[in-house]
Length: 113
Image 1 (cartoon, rainbow, N blue to C red):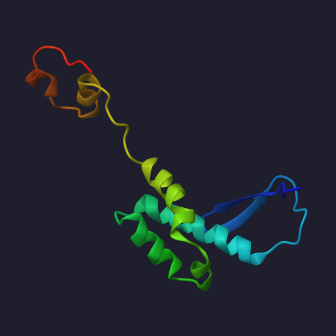
Image 2 (tube, one colour):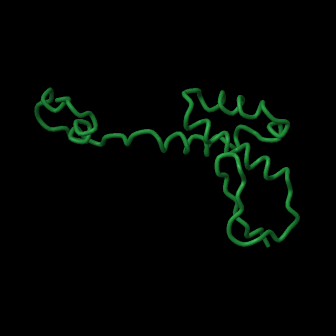
Image 3 (cartoon, rainbow, N blue to C red):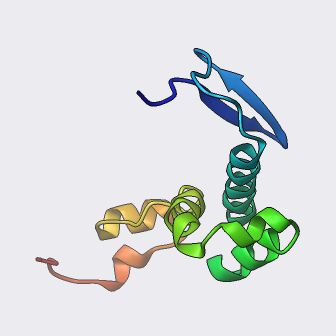
């Protein structure tokens, strides 16, 4: 039976919520959890590509050698993607996303898919 405990990282402090562990607590796993969380947070705020962020964060700790880029890449991408604006689906959405512009005036006729 898997562990039912849930942990959350607030800033750099690991906080456990809900239920308790049904196994010995392993500091190694919490280090990996913290490192992956730092990768996600850094990816959000950085203009570097994901590989550069990963290399920068994991270089700081010996635990970093135990984590693969592939194990972090998708969560880093999702984290970074959350901050990006929604992609407009049509000219009306584009014009409302860019206040003070008149892109709709440059097009005549209808756009069909």
